[in-house]
Image (cartoon, rainbow, N blue to C red; front, top):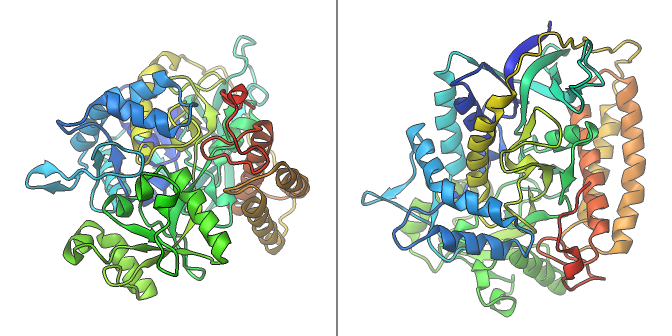
Length: 527
């Protein structure tokens, strides 16, 4: 395929990328690329909901305070203030695009999750992300100047080191990306005046994850290779309650179940959360995840139980139809009659590509929004259901800030992809082993509880994997699995490097040899 030129290149098709595309389509042409089908994104799997102040007994100041408290001192206050003050208007945007949130007697049915002081979680039953994705895709298809390319994966960003005929003033600038069409196996450049990274998270770097297989940190890894600033990669949120099903795919048991009244118990029936935090099951995720981890180690068990059996059966089935059906059909568990086996799993990356309050990265014409970005909102621990809100608030800000970047770059020439001399080797079995080893190393040594000894051990092993995979990448024709594995090893390196810089325990980063917080580290970790 020949070069594609576009005003905007959006990499990713979740809430951040699609809402940005809808806004920027008002004044430019937009090309969206997505690795799989159009709806395959972390957004699509988000069960719980989106947090915003819509109730009369709530106030942005309360949402601000809850977010800052969860973030353990590292939230950027100005970013959080923008989030909570502009959030309600962005909810109206979603509704205008066709999102249908659950109502009770005409009013929005507001849920409550760990760390929130008020009921403020708008949801669409327990499939909020899927409903948002559905509505945004319907709106996207109505726009004639938005082109959506499925089964296309970005390889690397195009910067001044690639561009020909570049004006020397355009230094440290992104001009688009090289992209692989996974079906045709063709690689071609997309030249853009503005590029947005909306690639989601990277939790598949761990053995146990709630994320779909696409969450391989592509945007963060590409930005790092292009020399963008990356921040706070040590803060990995482990969701306390993924379904424990060793034979099945990842499946999240939403925090909303605990907000609804679910109780965490050991397998012997003992309720343990009140011993760890006065908020019990409604404590922030980092506290709940560490408590579960401690109880599992103490009892020698591989899971704990989430008990919903004391709650009205019809209400549970109506509020959580997706989770009820999944557990019944896949594990033959009726959650209204027996507890759900759960285990912590890697869920969300609080760090990412460092941006300002308009989504600008440290590279000109490159923006980042959503989970792949570090806007400063989440600090050391993300407050539940703030992620979808962050994506839509900062994609709106990025869209309007990007208008100033739509200058002509027609004289810039991007060369075609050079794959001369590469081999088409069939070694994916070996790469699969590398992936499994990487995920196990990260789970065992860079998980919920860490130490310097474990981190250095992980660093040595990941460096060897990185060298082996990079060598394979350089001499082999690119494929989706190779690109994702390359990106995951880059992500693992960033997480380990960041974790080794923080000699304290704060939020999601818990070091057994530095168990206390230390105000000398009351700052972002910037790579």
